[in-house]
Amino acid sequence: MTSTDFDVPGKTVVRLPFMPLSNDEEDIMLSRFQSREEVVIEEAMFLTALEISRAIADHKGRPQTVYMVGFDFTPNAGMARAATTQYAPHLTSGRGAGIHLQQYILRNALYVLDDSNLTVHHVGTHEFSSLTVEDLNEKFRMLISEPTGKIPAIRDEPEPETPHVEVTAELTTNHFGDLGRLEAGACGTCCRCGLGEGAEA
Image (tube, rainbow, N blue to C red; front, side, top):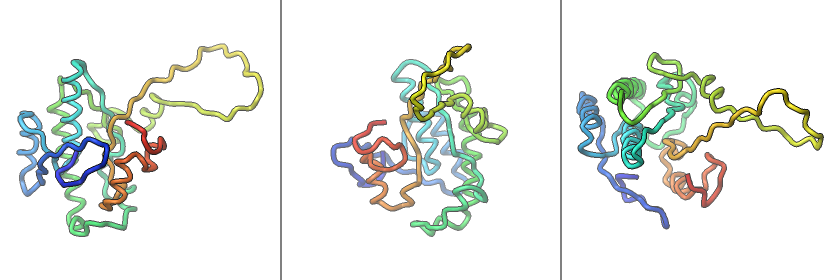
């Protein structure tokens, strides 16, 4: 999904208009999200992802659950601070203010989604977070060990149930504005999923 002429051979590319977040337009963006009359690529891109998730829930006729992992909205910590190389230097000024504005947008989007067919769990430490990172790891914990060749001991308790998790989308800036890295990721050759070329998410 893009607003540019970006294309991937053998893949379906959906083109939508891009709506930048200008001064004092966050309420217009949220109104568009609430009315659902138009699907666009919002500058607060997670809003578009949530709208697509709602459309999937509509199509399937059943509620969907989304876990938002990595949206910590802390420009002075983590990868937001560690990423020193940028391909779009004009975005550097006011970057912190922009991140806090996106946090405001998400908080209001979560309110809009109350009693909808989309359950969104923000993973973090904010007041609107429904899970911590530890909670998420506990919920979807998978224990993997190297084979020892020994006969396993008889367990007194039943094997832990491993929940099924289907990852269908990832918002990432791992390409850092580099079109070559973006194309590699879209073609299934990036290192994020570990599935390799031809993998389908």
